[in-house]
Amino acid sequence: MVVNVQELKNKYPLIKDMEQAKAVIWMNEGLMDTKSAMEGLTLSVDDIDDAERRWTRFAPFIEREFPETEEWGGLIESPLKEIGKMKDCLNTQWRAGLEGRLMLKMDSNLAVAGSVKARGGIYEILKHSEDLALEQGMITREDNYEKFALPRFREFFHRHSIHVGSTGNLGLSIGIISAALGYNVTVHMSMDAKQWKKDLLRQKGVHVMEYASDYSEAVKQGRKLAKEDPMSYFVDDENSVNLFLGYSVAAKRLKTQLDGTGVTVDGEHPLFVYIPCGVGGAPGGVAFGLKQVFGDHVYCFFEEPVQAPCMLLGVMTGLHNDICVQDIGLSGQTAADGLAVGRPSKFVGKTIAHMLAGEFTIGDDNLYRFMGALMDEEGIFIEPSSCAAFQGPAKLCSSPEGRKFLKEHGLEGQMAQAVHIAWATGGNLVPQDVRRQYYEKSRKLRAQQDTQ
Ligand SMILES: *Cc1c(COP(=O)(O)O)cnc(C)c1O
Image (cartoon, rainbow, N blue to C red):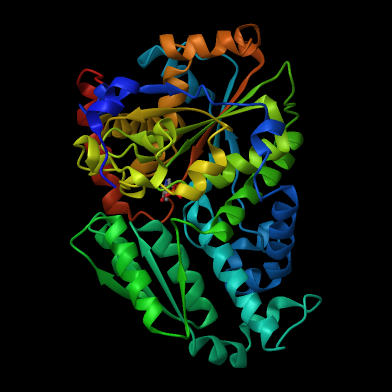
């Protein structure tokens, strides 16, 4: 499809800032009450419950294969931590004017994959494996799924292959879980993928194919190769409902965690959640889940790099995957490898179009600055992609767009009781020497003037 950029710019003037790679704030005028937003969608809370039960069935297998999940009883879950010092730092160094509490949802520390991809990617492979095993009569849903670790299961899965296209983290999660089950697994990596991620996968016996092109191209190649092999399965990050549902379970778990820390979410106590976005599956799935659990009291914001704001472009214009960031002259290249996606998921964009509160975009330099600040203030390391999560908390209350949004939604009087959650989407597997390089970079950048 040929996109008429001039026409789009007239209709959506924000594109004029976006094409210059400026950090922008977009508030979604299409945001609806949750009930209306759900109309016409095929997914519902029942699908999330079904996904949650599947995770529970697999818990004995996960606990056995990945003993680090023992404290969660074989569930792959992450801590929720209040980060008061980071909040103070945002208020002093970024003049954020943030009230209420700031928390970090530490999917950066999720077991097995060290990123949010542990939710969607692992879930999809578990679902596929359960489907195959059920089809063959190898299990029933009432069995103890520890069985999946038996040699005859591994031999069975070894006759099947898995393909996935990735900028890095999805490949890590799919590669690690698929190898654990015994599959023949190939990860198609885009040029953005970091070397250490490819090395780690190869160590685990995963085939890694490298492409000198972007994410969409890596996905295309994976899809093509999978098609040629009848015993193979392609994990389609751009369209997968299973990935989406795997992510969505996070919302129910978050509710339990908030309840446990005595946090209420209601009309007087709004919840603001900020999630880094690539193709859309992870933030979309999580946001969809949050809307089912907290309804109109949760406000979900996505965050994208200034060079790759694909979801913002797709949802704002309604063109979804018919538009890409290159259409408006952006490169799609960013230090936020997990977010380096030029064309958004149509399925996700359409599903969350009326649930998304808005978007913040962020320049690469600011990613590093937030990274360094979180290290210095809280002693927590998360990878640069994840740090996009702080752009919202830094800007919501201090920007004209944010303040207008709060006013229009009658939220101004409630901000002192608000909870803000920055969703840390990755970091745990980043090697020490890479962490040191990032930190050095952040120190240099923090010594300079804050730009975007
Ligand atoms: C993949 C990823 C995201 C975004 O997930 P999408 O499903 O691509 O939108 C965010 N942060 C990190 C660290 C990621 O790896």
